[in-house]
Every structure is written in structure tokens, then in C-alpha cells.
Image (cartoon, rainbow, N blue to C red; front, top):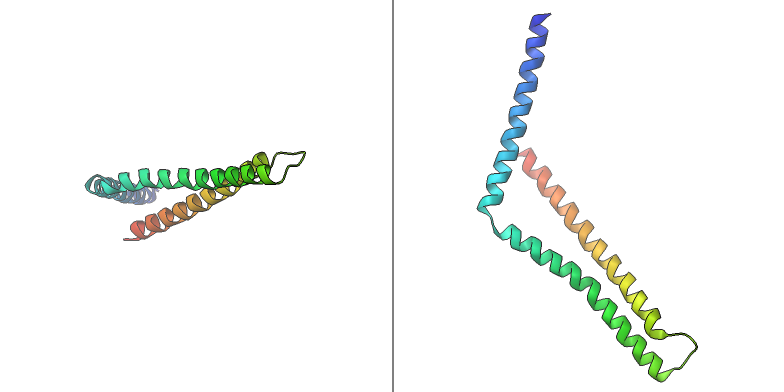
Length: 112
């Protein structure tokens, strides 16, 4: 019985040791590669612009429509919200793609 407990304990210790080693190696890699920080900041900027640009284009198109085609509702507001929705979907797409790439990289790194 004590032999079984010792074997189980040794296995758990070995698993824990390998997990710690993987995390330490990942941390050292992150410290040695500071460009990943700049990449992250650039990605935040890209996401921001992917929301702002369609929103502003929608607002500009709405203003143009309001000047040329007077209606009872505001085209500016309609296309501003439409541009915002398109920008949010675009940002969601980029974030999900980046998240998927990060998970694939993590799986590849864990398998090494």
C-alpha cells in the first residue's frame, strides 16, 4: 500500500516539476523577447482603429446623405451606429484570430 502511494506521489511530483519547467522557460523567453510587448500594444492600436475608422466613415456618409436627401430621420445617426457595429465585429474577428494564434503557439510550445 505504501509503495502505491509512493509511486503516485512520485508521478505527481514529476508532473508538477515539468509544469514548473515549462512555465519558467516561457517566462524566460518572454523576458528575452521584448518585441512581444510592442506587438501587443500595436495590436491594441489596430483594434482601436478597426473600430474608429468604420464609425467615422459611417458618420461622414450619413452627413453627406443628410445634406443631399432630407428625411424625417437622421442618416448620420443610422450610419454612425452601423459603422460602430461593423467596427466592433471587425475588432472581434481580429481578437479571436489573435487568440487562436496564441493558443496554437502555446500548444506547440508545450509539446516541445
